Image (cartoon, rainbow, N blue to C red; front, side, top):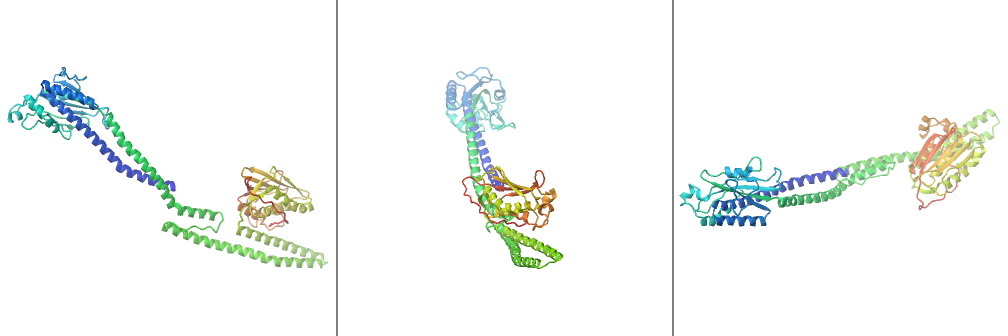
Length: 539
């Protein structure tokens, strides 16, 4: 969810940046193109006016202007006469005097602007401007007092150049001087031509072409777009960082609710969520906390009832068994004695059932913190306690496995002892006389130790193995005729509380194998040596 919020925030900022910066960049690009075209067209028009004057001083001025233009700008100047063949000394002849642009200028008096590409511009800007003879114009020149002389024209050149605005290409002399014609440049449909026309009395004496390299323009274009691109990347990076911070702040209440739900699902009914964040999450947190509180109260009441009932039933059951033993001692009738023995057996079974319920209630009520324990040493101690009971029936208990004394596992205080007591009790109950119970301690991996108990009893079917961990379920192959039917339920509860696993499978050669997987600890962890005690079994 955090990733989606960050992506959405960055996308929103990116759209905003594109909406503001891209139009500005296009505007600057268009302005750069327009300013360049206007400047080059103005210079070409000025040189065309000098060419149209026709005398030697004007040509020399044109030559000096063309040389200075080539030296100070990335442009070059080309000149062609009306016949397209002879150059006007000392100006050089263009390499292609018969191309279409020169043809339009010399034949139709059209000014052309060619950027070389429909996309932004090509490698150079080419502007071709026709030059008109100023001494042969009729109409406006006569009305203003006749033809103007060369000196007068030279004095009006600056006015002609300054009168060219907006890229329109209109060339006019100073007031009172002859006008050689007007050139109106308009963008053609293809975006590469600007066209002008002359009056019917104008005579075209040549054309001037300016080739302006656009490399500098391209560099400026890259700076315009590159700066904005770098700025956009920086803004997006900052937006991503801020978005991550904001997203984590916004989703913190949801993560707390998720943590609470995970702990609740793992069986921790005391898990609660802080009531923080927006109104919606606060309301949800309060609702979940109230539900968890009610459920915790109900389950705790049930556990307390089971524990109290089990504890209170112990005393009358013990008294009842003592009474039955006294009756059996004072009765000589075999039939009565047999009935008393059956009643005593049922009392014993009920006592074991009550003890198992009490152990299971205590195991569910509180999960103790796992501690590092020496697995093999603990197993050896429990086997010492159970071997006398096995010897009474001629059953042999064998300890095998590759795990040494350094193998340590994580288990709650007393949990692993209770697990071994229940598993060994079941294995001893179903094992035939003079049978063998094999206890195997092995290393199952870098983070797991395996404890297996194999018996030679009748074993269990796959369906029975699937139900063996259910409470009060009795399998003939598992518990025989006695037992509280809670032993394996207690084993699973205790092993699961310690983060381990317990499974059942068929033992090689017949019988049942109880496999217990336990978490291991590192070499530097403090370990606790087990202390022996009497056999304890809930089943």
